[in-house]
Figure 1 (tube, rainbow over the protein chains, first blue to last red):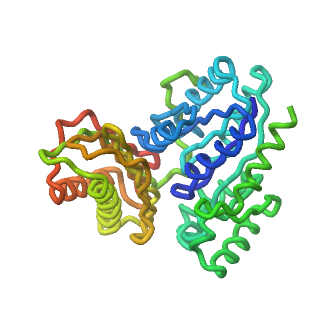
Figure 2 (spheres, rainbow over the protein chains, first blue to last red):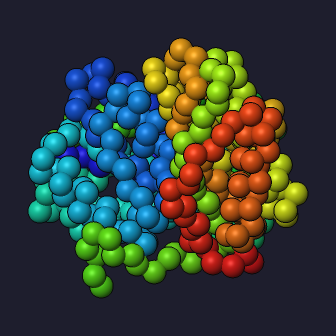
Length: 205
Length: 150
């Protein structure tokens, strides 16, 4: 089972990207599961994904990077044992720290035949000033961006070119190693690039 | 450190200042609501909660989401605070007199009681506009992952 993380701040477009990604990957013959974690006690994302026919495990009660890390651990083990997907896409909360989630998965990997794949962190270019403007928020968003293998500059269809380029410069400064991809869940721009990155880890079985 | 099911662990310090409120309830009306009206309910909820949170001092609308389910149809709505960018999607079903509504509001810069107040007041306002009756509540949750607003 390969684990891929689609992370990013609240409202950055994680769920919408996952809905598209799963179609792409399933269409290529992969068995895909999604592990989703909403901030609130009441889940919305998991219900929506189920309605669109995805195999979803929903973790509530807190954030999987800290408060309910144990639930994530147990759920991943059960998924690996009982459902045996080729790929599990983890959607942490919008306030989760991706490396904390990755570390939890890494402790499970040896025993459960898991391979840790890419961490994609979405960045909402239309809200760049706010996200990197407030100190407290900037600390969280920067932490998320630093943990990314791929940073997806999302909503490029609604943000101005100037905003997109400002976002690119800002995220590059925060994480110079990450691959930066332009993404639009509406137009589909960038989705194939991310799907390919996920496929590559899937094929390295 | 124990990590068993149901065991909660300390919160990450990066969560400071972000609070949420989630509620699930049954809603009904004597006259059936068609798809257009149901989409209107979803969009108005997003707009009202967002505006109410901002009026109460929110620095950023993290994410406000709603899920409406009824026989033969469902809708999901969300906003990050821009009134021009409220999305309502799903599969429209036949007119209905009853639906199940789930709302989740996550806000930066408001404390948990204020997020709850903004959400509940907005739901009341939208329910009144559409003459919707809220069924007796199931337990509701207020989450305070970030502690006090900075």
